[in-house]
Length: 458
Image 1: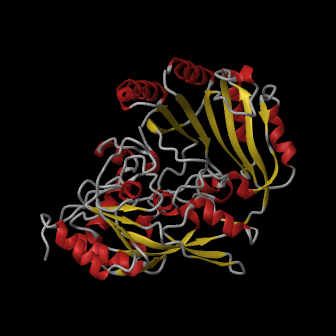
Image 2: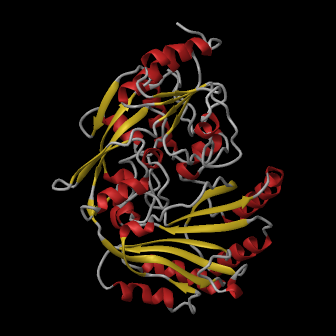
Image 3: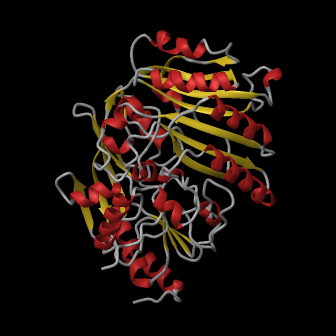
């Protein structure tokens, strides 16, 4: 058995067994391979393993467990807390695992963990089908699914986990388990919202829905307190076929915006309607104010995941919460705080929930915030690490006054905020159940680079 002090021996062992790629600090592509989406995480793993298949994953998990080296798991690399990297440990990179098998007749798909949301959506669209993921095509389906998945179809078809039918997962003992409602149902429950605490999911089986052309796109209105409250009220009153992601921010110099709007407060909404009579559904939103830009139209669903240009690695701080209402005073509070920020970009994001998501019992999955009406995020993007403290202070102050109670959070949008915030992501009974399952499948906490559920003491 290798010790934690012998990474050279561990790397040699991996070279002898791995069918994928091994990247070490001596390799020319090492820096690119260790870079994650968010800037500010400059971690240097001793070795990066790009797994070719599930057998490689089993080998890496076994070696990490036996050597004592820290293990990080990376799929899309979008972890807001930097969990997709490790300092001096083993980074298991799943990005080469792109297998995707679509059964259009049965409306199911098996997708390997390296598939990105945009890639899956494009492939499913060839059959006029879709599974609801998040709102960004470059995000990996693995991490997004394990935390819940709140995206453009959340009111119509629920969370991503509501369409998860089965999974294959490598647990800490190196076993490959098939989990579903009948096989290891406790583990299947836990991975639907409990994050990466319980093993490495190598494949996911999803339900697909008929989603071809939608009525959607971007609608930009001038931001006033009345527009914000009216927009949220209209989104709550809309048919559940409509899902909206509402961003209150200062208008960036986007080419489709008139120059006079640049720097002014706007409501920028990304909206998807899956149904008939789309013009009628959007009329209440358009009536709130003269649109600055109106790109709502019949489009292929894939247009909601446009290609991303260039290498964008933002420095960012943020806070997530659930709130119950947005009245005029809340809207004015949002406007005042966005105005007061000195960040390169400051934003308050509001997502009206409900619909199919809310009809699933709160204890059916580890994501338990089914009854919450609105999910809110506040965030600041900035250019230099030296600015982090001032923008964090702005986020903390904004979140404190925007909060409407219990501090509950969506685990996928929690950053590197400490153990107490992980507890905020789960009601007590849910957390206790997760901790017991963690103790069963990962008692030594091998999988701890995540929003960590501590194994329940025996």
